[in-house]
Length: 177
Image 1 (cartoon, rainbow, N blue to C red):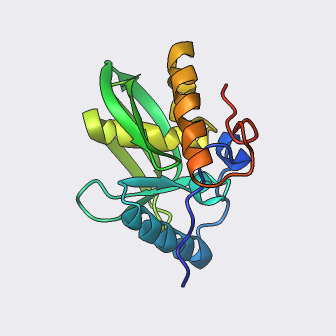
Image 2 (spheres, rainbow, N blue to C red):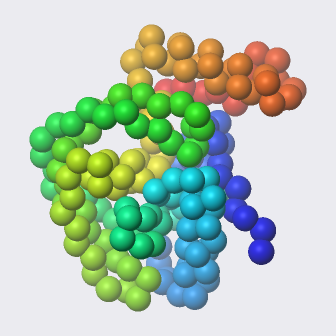
């Protein structure tokens, strides 16, 4: 089976708010399996459905205790503040210090339809918040100030040009908020 390609910045699916999952079935389980393969191959610790072109509210992750899925997740509580260097498979090779809540309580469903409730802090909390951003049409680039955006755009344009993109100034694929 062919590996799922991970969508990168500029792909419109990454800017859409994903729709709730209506049916938890075998096709969803199969897609989650393929997403986990792509995530491990990248390598990463989380991958949201929009990152593989599916505008649905779920993500896969492995925080060191085995692969898991969270469907229709919702952050119900957060507190504190924590700044940390964060990267993204959809903005490859770049990272920025991003401030996020230090602790969260997130709820959702597993592949068997069971309710899941997780209280997390620091890096684990950041993982869930990052994947939730993808479900809400948000990328790390949305957190940058104007100077950081200018620098990121310059670097990303150089990356596009080095990969033979036929858009000489890179403006077709680099859209910042």
